[in-house]
Length: 227
Image (cartoon, rainbow, N blue to C red; front, side, top):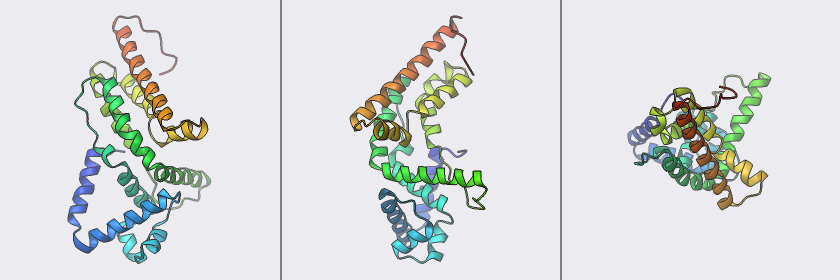
């Protein structure tokens, strides 16, 4: 995503502030209805949310012109405080641990919502492959990119840009609803076990990147297999 999570959150706040009275209540009703449906495992269309919320389709589409826009708004609601996460620590390992401590319980609480959003993303991919997506706007995901870059920000001066980006990319495999799918659904771990493995893996990645940076500084780093 080109827009930062802080800018996105600020934009949402400004939009909410601009919509007072009945307009704000209608938008909130639609978001709450869509969230309820997604928490039940459904990826609703705008029309389905309008029907469930007893709002006219014309009104619903004024707020959310596409399913992608609707689901994106619900996902942002689910992410909540994760979007404005910050850390005062200068230690990248601690910052990553703090991010995971903040994010993973929230992701679990809205697990069904994020899985429904993931389903939409996969469905759209399949439709693009088949050439049947048409003019439907693409549902985009990517909040984790800026979050993880922020978490490892103290390493910007220690790691070359390519290695910094590679670390953020590697950490992204340990962060998000996909981790729940792998560790809970496939491995059968409970919440505590899932979080422990995710935190451990993230810590290993950060320490490995830091150790490699030291070795590179001393001219002792092994040649990377692929960059």
